[in-house]
Length: 473
Ligand code: FAD
Ligand code: SF4
Ligand code: SF4
Image 1 (tube, rainbow, N blue to C red):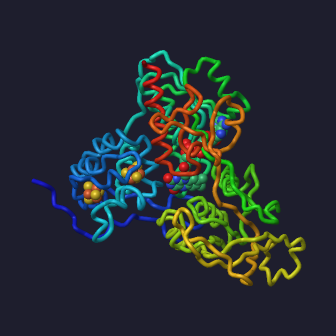
Image 2 (cartoon, rainbow, N blue to C red):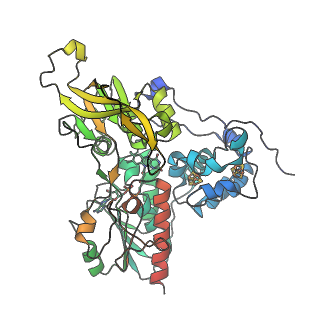
Image 3 (spheres, rainbow, N blue to C red):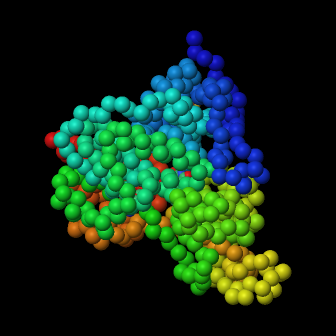
């Protein structure tokens, strides 16, 4: 007999740390479903034949099938279903923008909230991680050798898929730790580092060799890797080059790119009492931008002791690109959103004692203009237009620029015959992920510019399949 469907219109709430408490610690905000909650939420799924949710997922996770297993209490079976399409479910269950992907298409969303697909995926993956052993048998070697550049989600996925087929895979990573944005960008309170470490340990157990502190394009080039006998190279080097506004004052001390600020905090543990790397702590902080990166930087600044944090964004709440949940969490934690506001200059108060009371101890002024929304641009988003005479100054101690990133030109400039587009993204064949250079594949943010974890993972998977097809011919 079919189990009873739970017709509650709303998702089972996610237990979270209280806003006042979590705003001052780095522990995970969302604490995950209990087994009872997961079973209750799984019972909201109608197991639709047409599976609209699946087409909303960039890698087509078989959502009704994994939820059906979960409902039966077969958690490992549910994990195995997800694994057929996604190798990082503990990560994706936490950070995918589900509201614009799988959950956006869920039929339960028509008369209430969609099924909490991401929350269920996280439950299943966490259950697996708590119970599963590392693989103890290495796959039988097939005699082929592949190099992967970068250890973000695209590189990890490509390396894992190839290693499982017996390829000897070496991952070359520029930083001292593997994981890419998952470790240096996304903070611990959204994605605990041990989850990414578990994925890296799995790869090592499969026989993947990880070489850190290896900047491809400097320490070795892609051409040299090919000359050393690697039969294929996958480039998953991300888009880590920060964009700036090019306004006066951006070179002042106390102005950071979000990447630098987050890397110092996440990877170099600048939040500790006596850190090896300095970072601005306390005071008033303005974060310019409205994406996930801006939310992460703002919430990190708060946890580092800022007394006031502003998000400065030039459009309105409707256009804000960050995940809804992150925006809600940021607001609950007390971050102030200055919308329809655009910075035009950063002023240094070279004598901070001057008018100190009025400035609340602040050493910089972020000069801004108020904006209104005009006609839609080429992407259909209404264009912000400055309101004349609306200038004002926000007094701050730190400014963090989170207005996007681009692929670093280093690999392009040191690899012969590698074609890139006008945004610096490596050009690849959509069907195979192969670049203009034979035997060299690419995927993730290095191709698309800053995008999502799941799309990077999908690109790593596609390239692994194409490399396997090419080398096993
Ligand atoms: P990356 O994760 O950037 O990894 C690239 C790796 O390559 C890095 O480790 C880098 O050090 C290394 N590398 C670079 N150049 C070289 C070189 N020359 N030699 C060797 N190694 C090199 N996406 C979501 O889906 N949800 C979110 O909530 C979300 N939040 C985000 C928050 C922040 C702060 C940031 C920065 C991004 C966020 N994203 C989010 C985007 C997502 O993390 C990226 O789209 C994804 O990580 C891209 O994966 P990748 O493998 O292409 O590259
Ligand atoms: Fe949804 Fe992401 Fe899971 Fe796909 S991988 S089903 S988009 S949470
Ligand atoms: Fe379940 Fe929603 Fe997918 Fe239907 S659309 S199968 S209710 S998750």
